[in-house]
Image 1 (cartoon, rainbow, N blue to C red):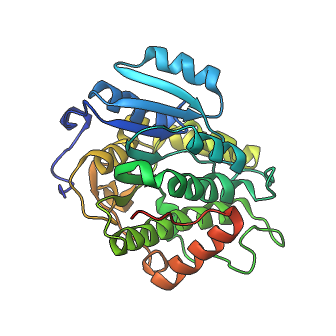
Image 2: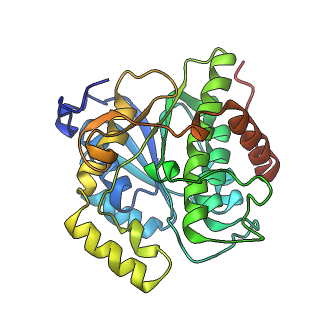
Image 3: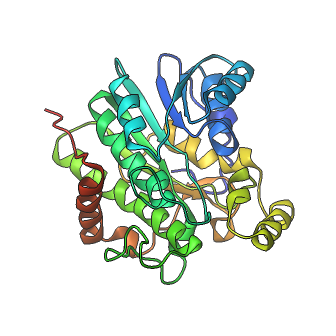
Length: 299
């Protein structure tokens, strides 16, 4: 991979003509930037979004070939409908959609909202689409998974006994990385050419922070966005790199600057828990039970 001194940007994107790429959560922030750049490079980009009217407005402003399809990752029936409606090959799935440190909410399926949107929905979507995917799956994670004490609480995975917004968010982002690890293991074992990757944006100024719990916290983040954060365009670079560059399966890309908060794409650091095969397999099995979706037969 390029080092932080090699300033890879969206201008370095290779031609994407003939490729079909799904980007979840593509109506704003990192997802919108990712969709814009990939469509501009020639890909046919499918914006998989909850608000299709908003998605259509964005699609009209994007270059190249795009379409909008409804997808609510917090609703397994919506995930199943999206996958059932897919016809033909899909080159890349970008699991970008997410929520961060929101007040406690439960989905129609009874899941904690961050676990559902950030992990369980993408887990189900990926496995349902996997027989159609020809190249790779890229999941957007976070360096928040490396905060001290962050782990998967298998005894309270759904935060039913104790909900703390930031802990639930950090757990869901660790879950993203464990998902990529176990997915790559299963793909390799199945002899599939498809690869799984993760990327994180560092500290990027997006509207993700606006949903965080507490007015004081949101105000602090707004100030930090202006003074510390890099732009959403820079934050999208690790994802674009992971989508388009020749990387080994299981790769993790983030900003190459200090603390991985800012900078150009470079290899990112995983916490010890994120590299634990036992945790990865246990989480996969728990996710299969919760969603009713498992790894498909790729034979």
